[in-house]
Image (cartoon, rainbow, N blue to C red):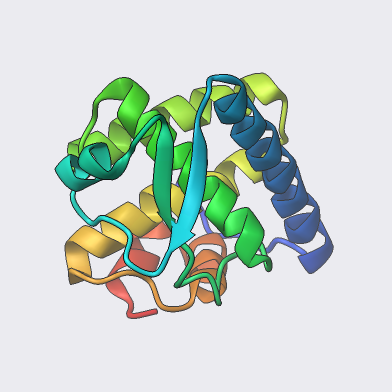
Length: 166
């Protein structure tokens, strides 16, 4: 994705985020069709080996915390994204390293494009996923305000957003 700076109206941003929400709902249903399910927890695994160990009969433990500033404005959607994301980790057998995260997100990006979302939705998804991975590995902590992070990405570019504390 480009690091171009530009103005995106709130209406356009909300519409693009709704496209992503539709994609996440579709993708979570696909995970269910593959036999996966989840339980929410306040003690989700932070290591891939632990996720594999705690996934029993294709039921994954998914974090239900840290959803307050999600771009989806809905904790349930954020949990569904985490479910879909972790199923992709398991299906690809990719860990939580930067390379593993990139591989999983690249698969998401291909699926998102096949789903037919707009270029703005793809850009927002990229910033929200790859951007947050880059932020995490730069700061060694998660983004505190995901919507502010996204707005900074859209207005000032990903490189700036990753360096600034959010």
